Image (tube, rainbow, N blue to C red; front, side):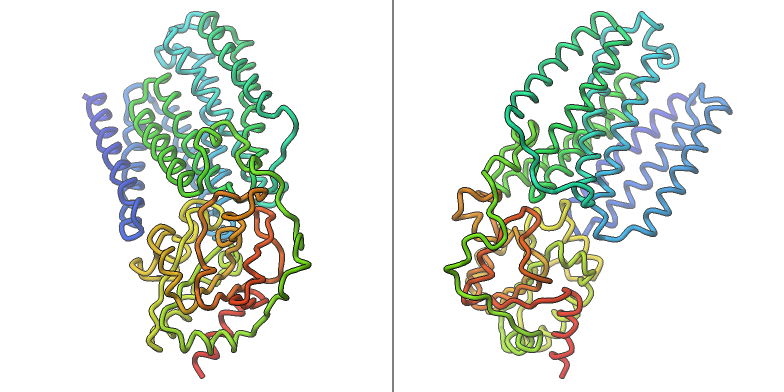
Amino acid sequence: MAQTLSTLAYLVASVLFILALRGLSNPETSRQGNLFGMVGMAIAIVATLLKPGMGAGGIVIVLAGLAIGGTIGTVLAQRIQMTSLPQLVAAFHSLVGMAAVFVAAAAFYSPESFGIGTVGNIKGASLVEMSLGLAIGAITFSGSVIAFAKLDGRMSGSPIIFKGQHMLNAALGALLLVLVIAFVITGSPVLFWLIALLSFALGFLLIIPIGGADMPVVVSMLNSYSGWAAAGIGFTIGNLLLIVTGALVGASGAILSYIMCKGMNRSIINVLLGGFGGDSGAAAGPGAGTADRAPVKAGSPEDAAYIMKNAQKIIIVPGYGMAVAQAQQVVREMADLLKKEGAEISYAIHPVAGRMPGHMNVLLAEANVPYDEVHELEEINAEFADADVAYVIGANDVTNPAAKTDKSSAIYGMPILDVERAKTVFFVKRGMASGYAGVENELFFRPNTMMLFGDAKKVTQQIVQSLQK
């Protein structure tokens, strides 16, 4: 009876997780999706505690783990800044990967506890599932650590490339496959740990050659890896819920990565193999080729306010700089004032704006920006030609025309927001530094561009003050 109730509870939790994913696919239903996910997880935890064979000792250990992890998670959630959310997500992915490695090790050294055989005599199918969960988990861990370091500025966001890199990755991948086959045949502890070590190295090597502009796709792909690692371990220990949720995370992460790659004109195969951020050649350094360009035209917040006050159609393009300055609230305040002046306001979101998928959407939702004013690249790109003003706040690479014209650029081929087609383009930046991809934005030198130098929040606040006069 207890087993039946546990299985039924897992089924209910699985349905709630599916509803959570569905809800998270749209900003208007995302809060409801989060609620479904939390309720589903609560049901799953209770069902696990009530499973036959848990015993008082097992329940105490689980509750202790929940208390420790819950406390750490609560403290982090209260202290984390929106600018640090992408690296936090990458760090969480690393924990999922390492958890898969630990569970695989537990199943290997104590197979009786999971009903998969005895030490030295584990079922062949279980060894296959175990080795796959182990390998994917280890790759997820080390890859996520590198992603965290790049996003957090602890290592360079530029691609780290060396001669024969792809051949080395291919050779290590082939060797990993050989080790997995040998492990399934022999069940050797030495091979188990060789698989783990090789996978850790492979995760490191797959992520270091990926450039900063492509990190949102990396975060999405690592999310997918963590799901597949969980699903593989779920098969090993015979946990239905872990299989279902792992497959949901893995599939949804893979689909999101494919959509983002399509939006960036990248190859999904290159994402899987690593190194797609450095295939386009070296990026031009800051100031390269600027000798024959027109001087940069700098303006003041008062100038911007005057022009926008007389504009009919304004498109706001948020980027990571807005997140750093925490300017989303004042941007919405500026938009509200411009609406009162009769302007039509829209927000243009690039698929990889920020440091993780949906980063800008979360910020704008936090500022209570109406969902119907926020548009993706495909929806809004044609509207820039009719816009009187494009207000670019903290975005750089996603607006750079070099992506369409410079074949040597690291961002060549990536679809961009066509802000250059607006009658007037305001760029809010602290200085002339290049974007995260290390590519100078030639749009800064266009005759219809005006640079507004300074902190994004302060500049926008000054515009608001001018609009209120």
